[in-house]
Image 1 (cartoon, helix red, strand yellow):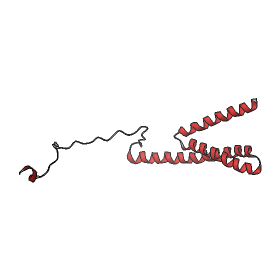
Image 2: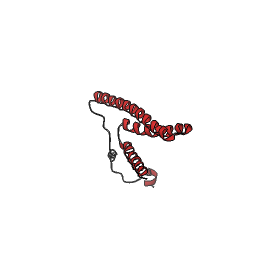
Image 3: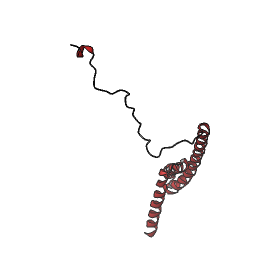
Image 4: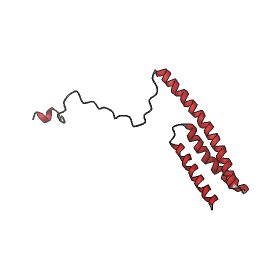
Length: 125
């Protein structure tokens, strides 16, 4: 019973730590999370065919986490190079809005608007 509670609490803690990677702005963290989840699922499916779903899920999760982290790290490097090129070309760093950009400012017409104009036939009867 103690071993089951320990495994359950360890699994819950790893799930919470893993889901915290979803909020990360880095592709390496997001890739490691997605790779780990996908690898665990695929490892469990392949492992159940051979009769060992648990070890297959663990091996798949480790392999998926490493592969997803490596791919995400490569994407982070590409993103950093792109940001540096944009900053060098424009002379200013690229602005990333954390919040929504401010609303546009609408121009007022240059003349006062007094209502619809119906034409001279309406006004000169």
